[in-house]
Image 1 (cartoon, one colour):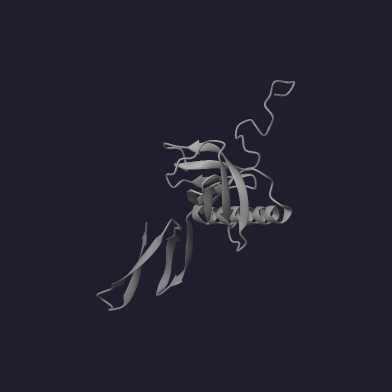
Image 2 (cartoon, helix red, strand yellow):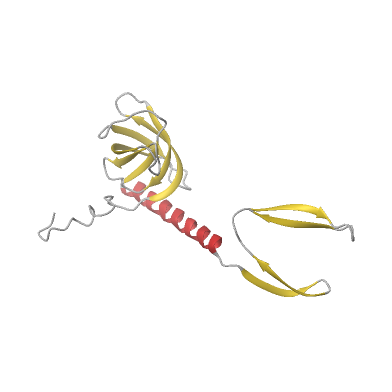
Amino acid sequence: MSATGELPLAVSGDRRREPRTDVAVGCQAVTDFDFVLLGESIVNLSTTGLLLKAEGVPAEVGELVILSFQPPGSAVWIDVEARVARLINGTEPGAPGFGLELVEELPPFERGLLEAALERSTRARERAARRRVRAPRARSGPRGNGARRQTVVEVGEVKTRPIAVPETGLARRIFIVG
């Protein structure tokens, strides 16, 4: 604690040194002692730690883990040693899993590669969220024999199904928003 009685910034609230980015990254995480597979999926990631989705194998806080993974969108493998900092159980997000803290700072090349990959991943997720959240908009214009007003709503997954229009024999598509 500081002289004013406040917790240092890195300890207050979220105790992580750096913010985590939600990802879906494959990996190989094994215990340092007997090479038992702990997990093969990273749920969130930063340059100092990660959340590993567990495969049901128990681990203890403080246990060393050897981890290999590829940053999102990269072909380069990063090999690191991490320590189990937290066990995630029950209904917590990521459960069952392990919060892992990297034992040593990444070398400059690997750190830069990971930072760039996480930044790209964050920007892509934000762009996707903006596309999903757009408000319905109305378009109008000539269509067929006259002007019609139509509303286009962008929501979730869109499926199409062809239908026949009996009067004209023409096929039309209807859109099912789900």
